[in-house]
Image 1 (cartoon, rainbow, N blue to C red):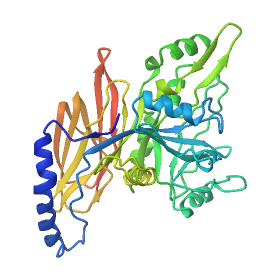
Image 2: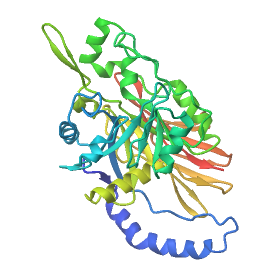
Image 3: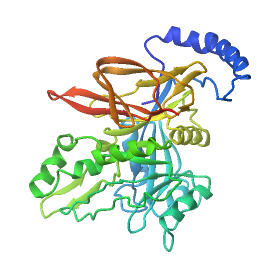
Length: 390
């Protein structure tokens, strides 16, 4: 997918961006010069939506595919970007693998992998070696390079059948992490594949095992965002493990298949430029700011989802913080669904349809969940990053 930009009201949107918005920004800018809070005023509308797969392993660690094979699968799944995070190495980056492959931009980070507390390090140039390093020191080491970090599979329970030990995040006392995985597809899937019959069944029918983000992860995220901005992303932890039996060779969760499931959509003011360095900065900047949302695109591509706010000082995007007394929140989804607005994790409002509007006056982190009706029930589909009213 070449990114999603605009809406069905394309003429109105273009007119707004090219004529009305610049004039409005000029007026607001003049007014803001005397704003007592010194608050940053209206941002650019983030009308471009690029979808990507984050937390993917290649042959540079314990994945089964080469970077080129991963890129080929990503192109087939119509992704805009992939973030490869091999264990304790930036071999893909050093080997010149970070570049465009067709329509897909492949970015290379690292999964810093001590014996527990795994951490995705993005935007770094030198691999972080966790040996002899405290967990808090690991976070600082990423920051010291100008990078940012995401807590990986924070409530990973392990999987006894596949021999995967639990690797949860326990170092919540550490400060300075930028975000956390709120929905890890492979660990969601692995919850139900606990013996040979279920492993075979869910390998052949993976969607049947998908229940949505862990309640523990969402609860912890809500606790954290009540205190400070913490970015929530969707991840895959994709390995495309190949199992060879006497009569059958089977790839468990192939790259192509998982690339069509849990995605992180980044919101941008303009389309990707098809220039590696420039697009890398745009994607990472959007993630760091929380200008992104998580969706299970296997049900339906969520491109075009909007969650914004409006204050007297201008437009607010998901991930942003405002210090005014009220913010008018607005949601628009690309399909009919059950829309829930939460403040610090608590349900504030529920609507069925494609739109929700709410005037927020209480301090807190406001986020959106959307469930899509499928297989005669509502299934988890979209999770926004919060808009913070401080």
